[in-house]
Length: 390
Image (cartoon, rainbow, N blue to C red; front, side, top):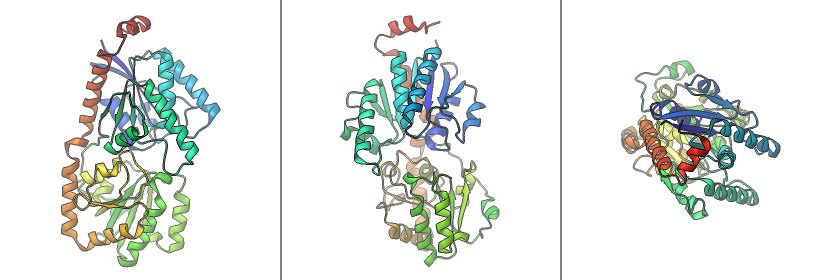
């Protein structure tokens, strides 16, 4: 008997959670699993999902922002879809889909409900009251879950400290990447960057979490000492216009390249000498894993998730969040010490190794799905009620 597995995610933005969900859907053993996807509409990866060999259901009311009426409509739509599909397993991702999806799955009587924390919906920058509400929702939804998956030890520790999932089994399954390195790159030529320039790459949404203003502040500090440095910023979002305007006002626009969302990340990384990340919080930053695998020396704010990847002074440099000057100093140091930087990059590549292999991630999920369904309480009742054995 094949297990029917339905993944639910808020929107298919170009991010680690979304890319890994699509990879999982396309690589789960088709002899053992029938898969489907439910998500909100309007994401960068919507067309890729439509091309997949699985049914995809777009729920227009499933959006990232808090919209009570839309959220209620999304909950009802999710419930109806799950009652129609009758999956053995629902696996939710991202905060909004994680809350609404698990409630809908519980109400629909889905036997196995799993959630992956790719990060938390509550953040350090939220108002205390709102943060408490989100934590309470996560505690409640953990009670509806059969199993929780964390992508970083830091997130697992934080959840335990907050009492999230205290009675729910959990496991660590890394958010994997496809290990590929571009032998050559035309990115420098495309952007008009000299072959002798020192290039720093950063990848991420232009939103508060990724803290793009600190990226360009670091760039400004570096350019005062190393004028032949270029920064390639991959991504887009609500803060991009203000960040670009600031760069122009500071007179550094010619050295900062805003390239939007790109799918040729291996080529982008192959054009670089270093990687910079200034996130204020993280689950597990996929871009940092990719940069480490590409043997780039990395400088990153030492927030949750990042510390699972970088070891300060051994595989990269961890900086206190907000310390723009120290981040700039490390970028300058790497330029002045190329051999040491090369060793850091090689050590980072060894660190991520097989642990972050995306096929290993899929295999771990396959085994988890089987184990959880085989041992689900009242399995015979569910099979009778849902007629899932036919």
